[in-house]
Length: 540
Ligand code: SGN
Ligand code: CA
Image 1 (cartoon, rainbow, N blue to C red):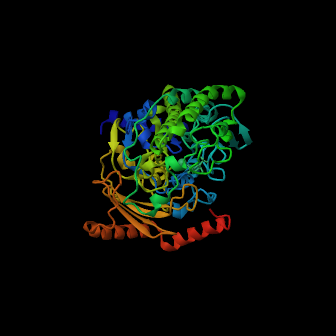
Image 2 (cartoon, rainbow, N blue to C red; image 1 turned 45 degrees about the vertical axis):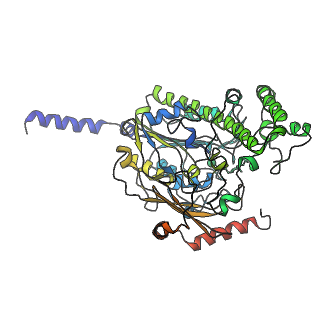
Image 3 (tube, rainbow, N blue to C red; image 1 turned 120 degrees about the vertical axis):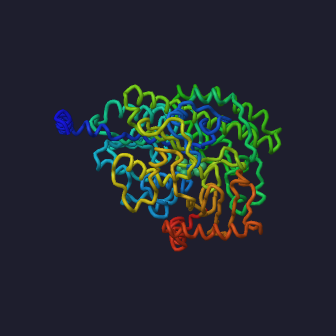
């Protein structure tokens, strides 16, 4: 080795030794975890633009990676959030329905980030029944939260902030990044939208814009569930029969009274219209009122003459107008956030994730809501950008699950992943979308029954080719779908002799997965007992 080379080496060592801890810190990536509530992948133009353009959310995929087979392990709000935070299936962390509060003795990934020297924060909807652990700052909505002039729970007490919830959550998050966080530390922020959760109240501007739009009907809007079992027939999430005029379609109770009453398919919800509407102040109401008048006048004039089929279509259009209007606000606000990251120079070293707590039915199979293992609710959007590591414009088709987020973030930031986390880091896929990914199938388990929408308890296994489901509790029914031949899941082939071998093979694989993830009949019984005990005689 010559002398010059030696000099370079020792100079390098001196420089390294002089580097301040903050400079080293700067190299650890930041995480911005953006999650919306009930955002269907069908309503993101990076997946399909038949319903809406979402240019801002799409930026994340264009400049990063789009996951076409991302899914949840239990398609309902709080359980999915608890899985994201703990990296465990819902039967392990115990928050397997929306009823019981989250067990705060469970380790969550923000706690690990905080311990590792990250600045951690959470803004928006958590829906846990208790406050988050491991975040330096939080402002969260109580329970489901409100769209208009929402209340926030903070460390200093509750506060009401005037305005539209999606704008406010973004303002709070950007302000925190800009001026409140400790700039010397890397950050892990959870920026969690309430929208587009039911009852889909848009901002006045978007309400007006989307009110005029018409959307294509889904092919399966009039599905009769011919080959499916009891659960699909008894679920209460049909647009015609279970969507509320007042609450969802925004028909004033007075309009219905003027019409001499309208045959309700389902009991009206007390305060369905006035609950959300009355949060607005007079000036805000004045912006909503002309649009509400148009909707109500049209309803009064046309509804009595409509056939059931036309009523279904009318409800679908009203639903899409409001749901997509809410998404349009989310998209604009995600754009504001991405712009901020770019302007501030944070973008290159920040992992940006966009996802939803689950998928949602946008009229497919005649439904709204979620819960089922069937595609629209089982799959969830997932887009990730990390300019320093993820090549722009990649599409990953591997089966990844909300379970995998925590271990992925930890690995990406150089923090040890606890051994009892059940998810797997998707780092190899981020570095190369086509990398070897050993997972053949995922496990799913839904519990909340009986409850709103009446989706029966079920668990199942899903591979790219097959979906096997067992519905239990007050039924004992199985379904099998050939996903490649029947992507819309219209044909349950469980009893078809041609599939007998497949049924046997998948049943064994499902049992193996249950053992692998520590689920069992005893646990199914434990969670049924806990739930039914809590319902007591109140029941459904
Ligand atoms: C509310 C909704 C339901 C929804 C649940 C759970 N009704 O009860 O439609 O399924 O929340 O949603 S609402 O009219 O009160 O909005 S979740 O996203 O929190 O799981
Ligand atoms: Ca949700």
